[in-house]
Every structure is written in C-alpha cells, then in structure tokens.
Length: 228
Image (cartoon, rainbow, N blue to C red; front, side, top):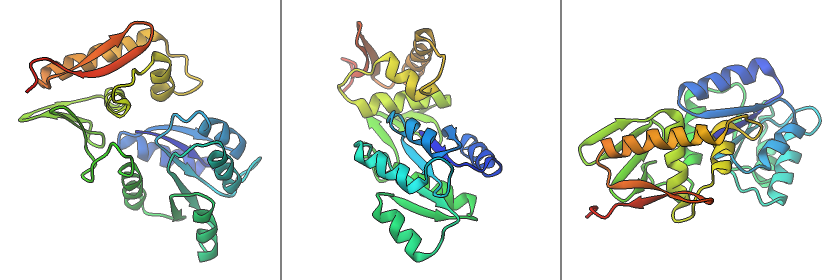
C-alpha cells in the first residue's frame, strides 16, 4: 500500500515515515501543501495523511483541490487542531478520518488499515483475492490453500495493483509511478525484474494464477487453464 505523508515538521514526518515503512507501507513525504497537492494529483496513492497547518497551502485547501479534481483517495487529517469544530470542518471538507496530535502509533496504524479496507476490492477481513490466490497486503503473505509464500514489499504492492486492476492491463509506466514514485528514475527493466520474481512466487504457491503480458499495453492477472 502506497501512502503520501504531507507534514511540514520534519521531526514529526521522519518517525511517522519510519513507522509506516516498518509495517510494510511504501511512503512518499511532502513538506509543504503545494508540493503535497502536486503529489496527490498524480492519483498513485492508496491513502494520504495530511497535516492542516502547513506553508504555501494549508491542508484543508489541499484537500479541497484534490476533491475538485476528482481524486477520491482516502485522506486522514493528522493535526494539532483537535477541537470538535476543527474535526467537523475537516470531515466536511472531504476528509475520511481525523487524528489529533499527539497520537498513539497503534491507533494511527489501525486507522490506516481501516481506510485501506474501504476499497471495493478489499473484503472485510482486509484480504485481496484472485481465483484461489489470497494476498494479505499487511503481512505481505501470498497464500493458496495450505501453501504460503512471503513477498517483498514491492512484490506485494505489484500483486495488489494487478488484483485491483482486474481485467484492465497495467502499464509499466503506471507500475513505476506506484512502486517508485512520480519522480523516480526506475526503468522498465525494474518492472520486468519484479514481474519475474512475482511470477516465480505465484508458481511456488501453486496459485493457479499467471501474469499475462499484453504487448505494448501492460500486464494483467489470468487464471490458468488448470484452475478448477
């Protein structure tokens, strides 16, 4: 799962980013509202954590601009403004949740998991399914019947993207944006490597699922012929 953290106080942003990475989230950090808006408009994030009081553009304005541009990414407002009126204003502006500073790390993680489960492709147990393949994006575990295989964070994110895209091919450019970031220098060879590794693990798990390449278009998941 890819998260955008928009927080101008670096001494706050750094430990949050480290916490999220420790729990297998991919994190990009923006230290002002204007840059946070630019990042959010790429629509490559699963969740946005957004501070309110920031330079260049405050969080509520960022949120308003995102929603005006059709960005429906779940937004968690993380802020020192903890009066009930502040919370109401934030939620009315289009936020999905609100957490006041200081906060408990466990509560932050729980709220992010809850926001992640709001995606249509996620079942209430937080798992993703394709054919007889099951992915737990929080533990990075790929399972099929009694076989379980550990994925790397990028392999897990890649499989999550493929499942969510369904029958629509996923381009290499979109994968690069999602896995490495909008300004990343990753190349097509990086995508091909992770596709190859994921294919091996799908086969190792006897998942009955393969990754099909559509030439000049992208990749999609396919249930193999021997799947019953």
